[in-house]
Length: 484
Image (tube, rainbow, N blue to C red; front, side, top):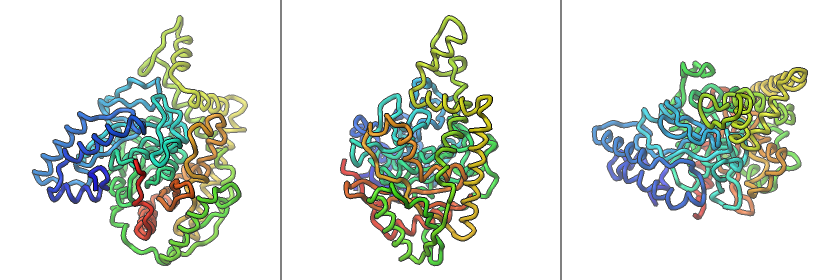
């Protein structure tokens, strides 16, 4: 096996026993990036010199007997997560030359374990999109079919992991932006409970919905990264003061007797036949492992997309008001302050970001606040109640991650509503704040990956990972790699 195909778990073993050095591993990944990424466009910034410096530091630490799960492991970070002295663009012209003076808490925690940063990955501008086509520096391609999208907004992270240009990556998930690209690219993507991972240093899109999480090749690798990045942070007022278990210790246990909720709202007309068949087979596999499926209802699912796009755009309108050309980022001068604001934002923001700012500003405006924003918050409460009620009777909920496999680039760019609906199965989790994972569960007749979504109770990522691992070990889907 080529070194760049190693999982974190495999790399850890050979690094610790001296069969491989961190510098050798880093060079293998950097060579892979050099060979592939002009075509795939997973990265916005490749940090070659930084990676080799970190790899040499890791090599020295290993010789001194230091042992950390991520020591010397090459990882990528989505380019809306701040990294000290390394450009963080959010794939937007307005932040094209922005270099943060500090690390996000997630990046800092990885640094404390001695990881190796391969670079910053591509995304839809300010994480607003489902295809990584709304990207200022080129669209990312799906490694399974380069004519198709990798999903979004963490499409660069998912494509980088799928094409073995890093061993794992961090993404962010506001309405499905980790799980949907993971499904499209045939890898594992975990959205933690809101508050489990600090948002400090994550460039804000929708602050009540955003969450950082891992995209990996295996469930065990997700547990390893979650162990590193989880925990309370005084720099983030929404960071939860809850104990962090050893997620890896949850793996390897049987799931006999567990009850899986199957929501009828997720299996209706419009679901792609290939996705439906793969997910149905996955549910039967879970049954064979001793789990019991139970039909449930999440009755307000049909309102989730509408509520989400009011709440998310409203928060985006507020959060993106800071990009005015005054303190940082792009500045386009005008004859007066008002013209400078207008020219800066006109030149710096792309079409989708402008659309969402306009929608959010309208929803928050005088005379419309109660009709839109307040009503959406009320619907959000009903969605939370749906999940709480369901979890009175079941341990986990199982659904398709997406209603269809990866679509062709350009297919939905002229129809924003159809693009928004690609997240119909993931959005509810962000509204409710519950954790969810997407794992590979099959392929369509066009040989495109299908994702299975497993949803858990608040702060019960351990049970989600336990079930995901049991399914993964009973199947071979996660072992398939695109031929590139």
